[in-house]
Image (cartoon, rainbow, N blue to C red; front, side):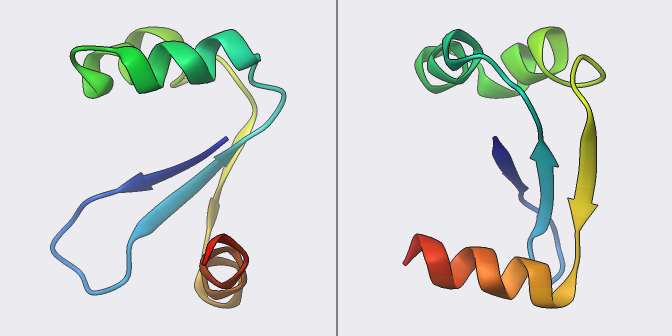
Length: 64
């Protein structure tokens, strides 16, 4: 699961979360508050790492 966080900078803050069940992804996309769902069900629940520079560019290229 890749999560893009809005911010003031030109480059988005992107975090990669591993081994997230499909049910969590679906729950996030259907939640009335994605921020609250993320805080309660994903953040600090799965191994994660922040992506920087070339990794973000590669991900954006693959998604387009």
